[in-house]
Amino acid sequence: MTTASDSDFALAIHGGAGTILRSRMTPEREAAYHAGLRRALDAGRAVLADGGAALDAVTAAVMVLEDEPLFNAGRGAVYTSAGKQEMDAAVMNGRDRAAGAVAGICGPRNPILAARAVMEHSGPVLLIGESAMAFCREHGIAFEEPSYFHTEQRWQALQDTLAMRRSGAEDQDESRKHGTVGAVARDRNGHLAAATSTGGMTAKMPGRVGDSPVIGAGTWADDETCAVSGTGHGEIFIRYAAGHEIASRMRYAGQSLEEASRAVVMDMLAPAGGSGGIIAVDRAGNVSLPFNCSGMYRGVVRGDGALRTAIYDEPLVEYGQS
Image (tube, rainbow, N blue to C red):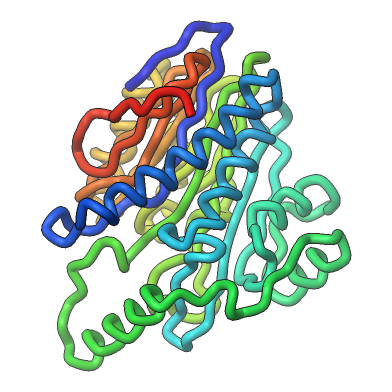
């Protein structure tokens, strides 16, 4: 866990849990992941360093991750078993628990902006499918053609997964089972926010919605406790209300952020089959980044401007101010 002074800001991001196996990770690809994480951190840092709101910072950070094909969100979204892309996203403001989410969409360049539009311009919290798409068009959300979202890596991952299913083999590659991007932040005014965006699981059932757009499961923010963004086996995160569970342990059991987040990820989700991890920040600017799988693409930045990132079970590496 990392800590901050009460007047400092804090931003944590993730690019998904269940990373590429070390044995398959090339130095060039590892460097590309770190560079993508740093770009997202820098985008959020710029907002917070200028006195901006946590909500704007997490939105900016997630947009960068959605634009990076390496990560499973936006441009890098995986395919369903039917060969389509269905994206989910959510955002939540800890100041007043305002929240917005979308599910099962493909077209908006940045699904996180679609979720934020729902939060700011809609009565409902969650919109899905064609209704969500119509809402995005009505509110001027930028769209891209299907070719923009196609990556050969994701398409080949689908073919490999479908081939394994036909042969009866079990897929042991965590990087295909789940992948998400997210950000949590505390701004200099003490307000918290969380944002999460995902393409889901490779070869998922069409229409399947995971934890990312489910408020209280994969996304949660409340100024009184913490902001949380999850990544992993979405069904388990939903069943155990992972984000809300962490906040409840802090509020009612008096646990620290680290105690609560670690207990949920290691002692609750893991035994139930919930492979994955979370990033979280509390009202004091403390940050926790636990995961129970092979790794989690993650990073942290504070008021000193140093960009710290990691992938596997290792300390965050500092890269200095960008």
